[in-house]
Every structure is written in C-alpha cells, then in structure tokens.
Image 1 (cartoon, rainbow, N blue to C red):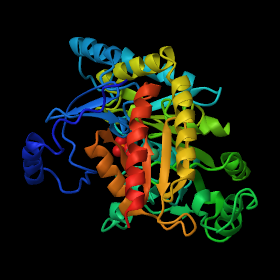
Image 2 (cartoon, rainbow, N blue to C red):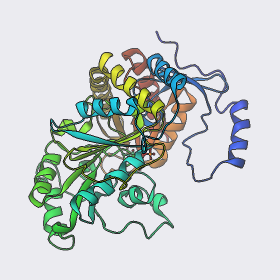
Image 3 (tube, rainbow, N blue to C red):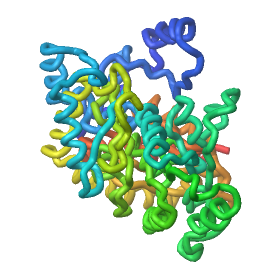
Image 4 (cartoon, rainbow, N blue to C red):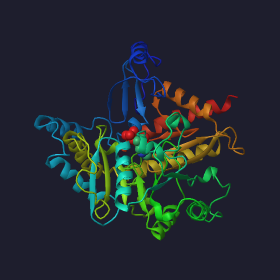
Length: 445
Ligand SMILES: Cc1ncc(COP(=O)(O)O)c(C=O)c1O
C-alpha cells in the first residue's frame, strides 16, 4: 500500500499562508493560481508543500515534469553542465550541447525528412518562431488558428490563441492576419453535428466558408493547431481529422504548424501527439517537458522549410547549454525507462477506469485523452451537457485538500497529467480520491 498522499496540516498551512501574503504584495496580479499550493520540494510523482503535506502530482508542473520531479539523471546532467559553463549565446557562437539536442530532436520529431531546429526559451517563443518562419518561408501573411486554442501570451502567439477572453482583454489590436475556425470538439460540436455522421464537416467548412469566402488560400501561410487542445479542455479530434486537414493544406500549399508544447515529449504515449493521426507536420513547436522544468523552447521544421537567413530570428538565451543538457538527458530517460510505453499503459488503464466510473456518475459528461493526457469534462446533467464549472473547481480544490494536485482546463474539465513515471499503485491512490470527491460533489446541489 502506498503511503501517499500525506496531509499533516489542512492546506494552506501557516507557513504557506505567510508566503501568500507576501506573494500578494510583491507579485504581478496577472497570475491566476488554481489554489494556494506553496511548493517546498518535489521528487518523482510527489510534491511536498512548505508545511510538510505531500501530494500525488497529477499536474506534473503543468505537463512539464514528464520524467518525474528531480529525476537523478537530469539533476546530474544539469550539475555537470553547471560545472563547465552556464551560457555563451548560441545566437552568436557555437557549443556542442545545443547541436547534440538538435540532432536528437531531428531523430524523434515526426517525418523521415531532414529537420532543423530553432531554440528559444518557452512555449510562446517556440510558437512565435513558428509564425515568423511560416511567414518567411511562404511569403504569405494569413494564419488559420482554431477556436479553443492556447499558444501562449506573447503578441504573436496570443493572436492565434482563442481560449479565454481574459487572455486577450484590453490587448487588441493584436497581430493582423489570423482567422479562427471551429476545432473538432465532438462532445460539443460547434456545428451541432455528430461524429461520424458529420463526415468531418468541420474540415469542409474551412474550405467552403473560410477559404472560398474571405481568407484567400493564396495568402495563407499555415494552419496552426494543437493535436489535442490543452488549455481549451483536453479535446481530442476524431481519427481522420488531421489527415483531412493535411489534405486541405496540401491542396493549397499551406504549412501545418503543430503545437506540441503541452502534448509532446511522450505525454500521450508517442513522442509527439500528432503521430496518433499519422500526419507529418511541417513545423513542430515544443517546450514544457523538453528540459524537465528548465526554460527551453524548440521549433523543429523540415529543413526545406527552415530556410530563413542570418539575422531573421534569434534570442540571447535560446538554447541555453544547461537547459539543452537537461533536455538531452530527458530524451535519454524517456527512451531508456520506456516512458512512452508506461504513458500508454497507465493512460489506457486510467481512461478505462474513469469511463467506467463516469457511466455511473451524473456529472461526468465525457472522459477523453491519449496516454497520460486525460480530461474529465464535468456537466450539470448528462442530457443538457451544461458545463459544471463550479463543480469542477470544487472537485479540484477538495482533491487538493485531500492530497491530490490536479487542475482544470477549458470550462469544466479536470485534467490529469501525472509524470509518465507513475505506477499503478500511485495512480489508483490518486484516482480513488478524485472519484470519491466527484461523487461527493455530484450529490450536492
Ligand atoms: C499548447 C501550448 N502552446 C503554448 C504554450 C505556451 O507556453 P509557455 O507558457 O511556455 O509560453 C502553452 C502553455 O500552456 C501550451 O499549452
């Protein structure tokens, strides 16, 4: 029997509360915290707060700690890189760590063609680079993004984001030339259709109503999408969706930009989630789990597409050697510890268990996901599918108070993204509590 979670003082405890007061005083109010978890340390799948409570981590630092917290191989790679040098601007000079990582990324990113990588420092930067590269390569201006998408908060990335009004309020005008179309959110189809009877109308709609009416395809540089929408609510498109989108892209010579910032590095049981649809994108954006918590973004493109010339894009810190050494170790650990297999195995199990649970619970509307990227969408009633956002928030907070670190996304979806190292015993311990709390909340009016 696992000894986790361990709650020794009801969170937030006294030490946490003392930090919260200072946080409020000194930190930007633009952050939205899910609940007052003040982290002291973390190891594997367990996070310890400053008051000594130990939580089973279903967040993995928001899908960053795929190899588990403080994996000894990553810590050792970071330490030994620190002993050698911390920075020397890959923009202006050379070092081996960044080259070694680019070579490894070319080997795992989808597509057997040659690839090149640009390194930045975050998910948003990897998206900015993708936007600029798509424009540079095609000499075209338009980008088609998807409703519900989250690509980051810098102005270019924010322009393609369409997830929550709070993210864009007071920031218009943003980058011109972005057109948003509905995503394949089958549980709440924007066209009120049902899969498979819809025959992928959401893709035909793009051609018939967007490209033929107001977004001239000859001006279109790229489709930019998340293969599974993350912040939008863990939304998984149906099996042929991206094949159909690719067909449309090929018809008009449009690039596919695949944002794998949240879904990449093994999260879904494949290196990159788009592999589940067997599609080879032209540009892949990657960050979060890549360097196990150190800031690193990668924009990986077909070598033929990454044809911009010197001076067109760069960043002083991008491809920092410490972050790159961590990332090289992450890729080795994922492979050697067979974490793709574990993500699939534990993810399939969790999906099956949660689906069976959901059938007998009135507020579980939909359970979806791939690997260990799993969403549980809560509703007021199954028939009306009215989103139960307050109930989702209540489940999240109560689960946390009982020792499970879990957060929501979209409007009313609980998201489960534990480290890919999680074993069955810990997963079951976490799911026992999550299900118990959902039962509790569903009985309240
Ligand atoms: C799919 C996706 N793209 C981009 C980003 C932005 O990444 P960052 O917060 O590192 O800028 C995120 C962050 O959650 C994301 O989920």
